Length: 474
Image 1 (tube, rainbow, N blue to C red):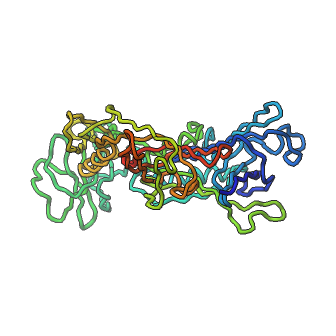
Image 2 (tube, rainbow, N blue to C red):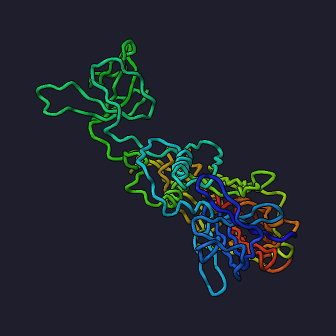
């Protein structure tokens, strides 16, 4: 296997990079590639080299938040990071480099943006677009969002911004089902203040119940009127527009506040944390891929052509790799510890979704197990139907289904035809087969790669953080 090569560039902040030095004499290199997190590259420059010096800089070309260091193997860039810390330790320099997603850490938002029913994948693009549009902030990152949209929506229209319908007025169109509106009446001398009711658009006629009643729309001219106690059926020439109540709703059906999804300069001081939260809300995974962007690589003027792709995938990154395998005793050097955690066991899942009290959406799943009954309750306010709650319960049930094989958290893997180093990506699922004897001899399961740690100086070995594929369901 060919050796590793390391090189450094200057990030110019306009999306371009300038080549600084190749064949860096790095030692004690530690590379960590993390699924949906910040990669890391740590290394030591053991002694001073003339070609690594820079005028007026004690630590040479390695300038925090300016220099990028890359690790290349077999012509493929395996890792890259921005120098964030430089320690002078006797004759050595110790470098700590964060992956490109770490650029968001501690980064404030510089605008005020309010979003209603917005796709988290769109917000992901907005955050990086905003950061890279600032002077000196363009890393050259391109987002690859797959699929381009998701079914999840964030942010609600505030109550005071709902469309207002006036009883008796004409020209109103039908509103989309499920949308919200306010309803009012012309003021009279008996009313000290304007009366307002609050409604949700529907096409279904239903009788008055308490203070809840229907409002109608006349088909001929779009006039609106409210239901009265004497209205037993829908009048001819009219159609149901919605259903109103007098009480102002304090929260949506899923319990969330009636407010938009906000990005604000006076509140958002750490876009790194906002990005991590967004990934959870939007149920997407991400990782950064660095690659040579041109056959020539580096021009005579020193410009280096690299591409930096931030892969964002709704529902989870990675694929089932039938072409790779981990086998204890072949490319898995250490017999992995198998954890069987009874605290994680459950044979029944109850999912609680949108709504409150008796109106809350509820789903269930029940496994077939001879063990004692152990139910688990999961709350997800994004679930709005019983069918969706049942599917979520089944997914969670499959994730933690009782299995005497337990779970594996770590693998020590060497370079081997079974799975050459660099052949897998974060999120990939690979089959793990046990040894020929011992407690783990029957080990045969699929694991998902969550993190890969490589120490090139110690040989062609990688330490992987993994989990059973079923347990890694998004």
